[in-house]
Length: 89
Length: 89
Image (cartoon, rainbow over all chains, first blue to last red; front, side):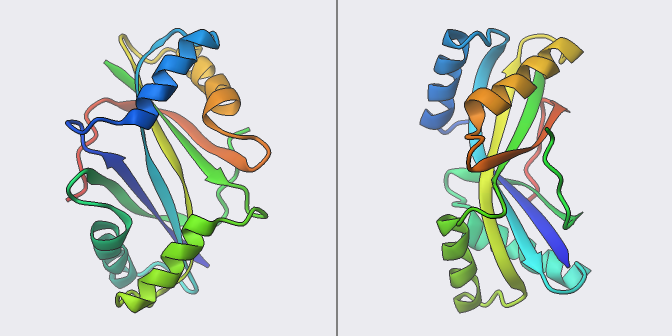
C-alpha cells in the first residue's frame, strides 16, 4: 500500500493565531529557544497500489484544490512515502 | 536563521473526523485514487541561530509535551530544516 504525504502551511504574510498561541506558551513551559512558530497541516493519502507518477500528479492537484486554501496557504510538499511511518519516539 | 519542523499525526487507532471528511469529499471532486486520508499537524519552529543538537533535543521535548497530545497523537518526525521552504507550486 502506498502513501502520499501532503504538507500545507499558512502563507508567510498571513497571521497565524495557532502558531502565535504556541510561541507564547513555549517559554512559559521552559522552552526558551524558539523565536517563532507557525502551524500548518500534514495529510497522509493512502492508495491501494503503488504511488505512480499519475497518482502523485492527482495528489498534487488535490493538494492545490481540496487540501489547501490557495488564498491563505501554500502547499509546501507533495511526496510519496512508504506506508509504515514509525513514530519518532 | 534555523528552523525545526515537527510533524504530528493522530494515532492509527484514533478516529480522525477531518481525514474522514476529506476522503469523502475527494471522489465527489474527481479524485478517485485515494482510499484513506488522515490529517495531522505540521509545525515550523524558528530559532535565531543554527539548529544545534541541544535545540533539536528541546524541540523533541516540546513536540512530546506541548505540540502533541500523547494520548491521541504520535510525533512522526522532528527534523532540522533550512529556513527557506519554497512552496511546491
